Length: 286
Image (cartoon, rainbow, N blue to C red; front, side, top):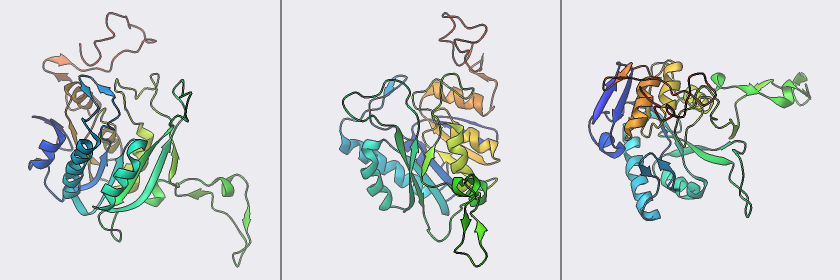
């Protein structure tokens, strides 16, 4: 296992269960956990395939890392978990056995191309918002306000109040969130099959943590949670098993300019000057 850190943001290169079991991240020290684990639907992450031998084996694994993440949380901590729509009910049960589920959020988005032709294709993913103590947790409502269309656009008046007043123009978001998925031409795009958008993580981290708090991401992938935490003046601890993705994290968090003697850089895209078919695989360093 290798570790990369600048004192504020730390990357652990290794298996999530092993690192969470060790004393690398002390128990009851984390303010917010954002977990976006493999969904058990067969995606390929470089040389690894997101598929367990059985559903029982998958949920046994999920139960193990969930228990460890709960241990890492402070008594006032919050945990957000994403999963596949196929797993929604099982995750709900597992989480309710350990924490209080405050919200079941639907992240919905547009189609990325051809959809299913013999059933209704999936255009959303579940996000669970959970806390250890339903009476004591962080929720910064004023930091995540969105436009209230009834109040802001239609300018309706609430005549039920003693003094008739226009409806509020801002409100806390409901539990149906629209954020576009990360596309190839977006500046934040990285070569990863399940990258989550910065805008999604901004809402989660701004709502459920404060400046200088610690955000833990046990399945870091493209390190969007850590990068967003840095943008919002939070600290982060990220775990990633795949070396290629660890390089992305080192670069995005600016922990080092080189990896094993080679310079890290964001890969050129096919529409950018200097791109060539010969160089398209030199994605993380030269």
